[in-house]
Image 1 (cartoon, rainbow, N blue to C red):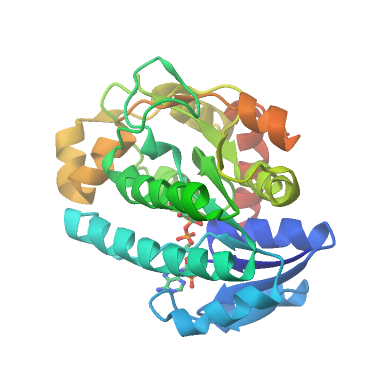
Image 2: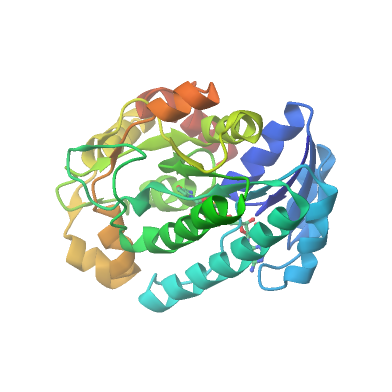
Length: 308
Ligand SMILES: NC(=O)c1ccc[n+]([C@@H]2O[C@H](COP(=O)([O-])OP(=O)(O)OC[C@H]3O[C@@H](n4cnc5c(N)ncnc54)[C@H](OP(=O)(O)O)[C@@H]3O)[C@@H](O)[C@H]2O)c1
């Protein structure tokens, strides 16, 4: 297949591009920084310079490919406030709906990257794709876009598949910035008690799910992409510190960390999402190589420690 991947140089997008290229697909990637895209170009990706706000930079690609994967997300600096949340959500909505209209017009498959914050806080209750979305602040934007995409599927036949990754970890991205780097600086803390469930997924397992979704996903369906064993946040952080050979870290009250990094972010990160992956396993013919965070984190830390 020839696939157009937006956000190609991002944490999730670059893993998707590398997986698709390794599987023999042709990939065009939307990039805003050609220098950052060089490693992907060297592996065979064709770069399409572009910008989320400028639809004319990416819509002409749609008729030339077999499928589109939307994995771009507006980068905003500083504390995560309601204003930054609104900016991110507007950019996502503008771009995704433009891509959806182009996919409808040219009869292409669209795979949209959503997230598990859409479900909101469900305590220790297992979440599957039928669980109603009562989004945490970080999930509000994706939840609204997903509702619009599914309406376009039902009303106009849009060939869309939604993948909802849990907490994505790997040697880069948000995981590196928020966990690995802060641990190295001695600043990593668990927000509150840490008894809220997180559902991790290794970035390579997530990329494989995208590859499977391209030809095995059913149009109009949502698939949760998480590993087999969601775990409380405190346990996740303890696995990280144990694997890195350092002492367990302390806790910080959510209200206090909220002042530093923004309340909507902390409210989302302290929510509990214990997510089930059965549907993706059954319908996408996919399963995570790293079934548990405890397994996947070892290689991730080894890669990051080698680079450091
Ligand atoms: N990471 C997670 O744990 C996680 C979990 C669940 C869902 N998701 C979802 O996965 C998607 C991708 O997340 P990510 O972690 O890969 O984020 P990321 O690493 O920040 O990547 C975002 C991508 O979007 C590009 N981008 C940012 N602003 C742009 C603009 N104005 N115009 C064009 N491109 C722009 C970035 O380009 P540059 O490379 O040039 O910065 C980058 O390629 C998001 O929708 C996110 O909500 C992520």
